[in-house]
Structure formats: structure tokens, C-alpha cells
Image 1 (cartoon, helix red, strand yellow):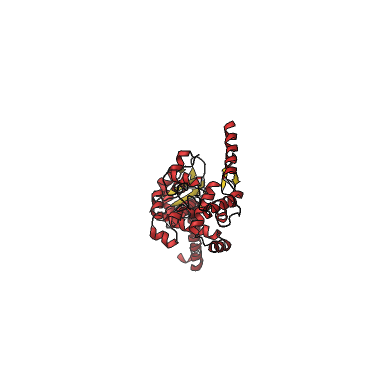
Image 2 (cartoon, rainbow, N blue to C red):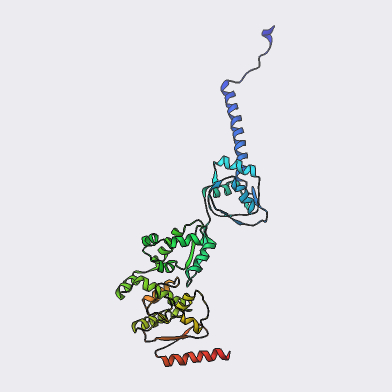
Length: 347
């Protein structure tokens, strides 16, 4: 009887194996799609204020620290899922840096930035004619390093010697321009970068003229800084330069107001009593150039210091617009000064 029971046909083994592999592959694809969706979900992190923001990380920290950091700048997210994604991606820590974050983020986007240290640069303008302490205060606000750390580097004679810079000249190498920097840049790196920027702008023509005139770069930068402090208008720089070099040539004190302001540590209108300050940079009391630059001059001021206008002026007085009236003798200078004093008094 049993011989009459119909047999259920079975598929060959290789077909069964194929079906099994297809099921495994489908399962793998579904898992992969699910994980990829979670990892790359562009709205996994949402800023509660619906705005882009900036996150600062100060130290190398375990990736778990990202939870508190992201929460502190306003993001809502699933902390456990973030750590799961970090584990999937093999990220164990976050690196110091300044990170610009969009209002909506995927786990991959934020974790890749933090774990790989993919910082966003800062755009910083260093303005001309600034005292060193003004520049340092601005750097302190924009970089990870502190003012104290910058000054420690600035006072390292061995470091400055390696760059061929004297301590007195350093401020002139903090070259004015607009730059992109990384927030974690060191003071050494910053000084080296600014020095390179200045040197790249100094033409061969300038170098050759400095040699021809037998003056030092330090003297040029010092004169340029005084011109920068005096001139409100760039077109006056060569004429002001010629006036100061004329005074040096005839042995007359520079009598440059910007050096008195520097000696006082203040930028304001000067009073008669100010000119009596006993200071190496007071060019009313000390002959010749002061010991070093008083600020960070522009390349135009440096060019003016090297290529002064040729004339016989040795006096100047500023008019109410900030331009200058130049004179060859003291009587003419007094007349011009009286004119502007009367104008101001009448106002």
C-alpha cells in the first residue's frame, strides 16, 4: 500500500541553497538600509532654536562628551542612538576645534566633524596701526590660546631668534590683513604665518632700495609705523615719510605725536603736558628713531618709508579733516597752525 502514496517532489539542493542565500542577502540589505537610514538621517539632530550654531571643543575627550556638548548648544537627539552610530563608525573621541553646525544634522555629519577634527576656519581681520596690546586682546577673543600664552611665545627670545625678529620689532610683523585661521592654531604658528604674509608682500624693489639706502629693515618698520600712526589718508604717506626723513637728515627731533601716544599707552588728543613724558619712545625728548615700531603698519606705509617723497618740508599741521598742511619753515608752520586753531575755536 505504501508504494501507492504519491511522493512530494523536492527541489534540488542547489536551488534550496540559492533560495537560502537570497533570503540572507535580503535580510542583510534590510539591516543595512535600516542602519544607513539611522546613521544618515539628516534630521537626527535638530537645533531647538532652529538655527545654525558653533560648537567649541577645548580638549580631546571621549565621544560620550559630545552628548553634553551638543545639548549645550541647543540640539535635541537620541543620545543612545548617537553613541550606537559612533560605535558603528568606529569613533572613540572628539578632537579640539571650532565646528560650524547646521540647524539639522545627521549623526554621520556631526560625528565625523568632531572625531576627525574637521574644523571650520575663522575669518579674522587684523587692523593696521594697532598697538601690540590691542592686537593681543583681539587674538585672545578669537583663538583657543590665551593672551598670556601668546605673550609667553612673543617673549621667547630663542623662538624670535629662529625667525630673525627682535622683540621690539614683533608688533610690525603682526601684519594687517584679513585671514582665515583655525581656532586651534598655536601662537607660534600664528606669528610664523603673519611674518610670511608680510615677507611675501615685500618686493625685490623694496629690498634693493633698503640695501641701497643702507638702512635696516627694523628702521624701515619703525618709520612705517610712525607714518601709519600719523596718516589718515594713504596718499599723504610718502610726503609724511619725506618730512620725517628730512628731520633725521638735519638732526631735528622727529617730534612725532604717535610716538607720544604710544609712550602714554593711549590713543587720544594730546595735551601740552603729555609731551614731557619721560619715555624712550617720546620723540620730542629723544633724537632719531624710537627703539622699535609702535604699531603694525600696512605695506603702503612700508613702501612710503622706503620711497619717501623728495621735498624740503620739515613741519606739518593737521587740518580738521585729518589732512596735513606742510611747511618748509617755522613761520609758515605757525601761520598754518594759527589758521586751524582759529577755525576750531570759532566752531
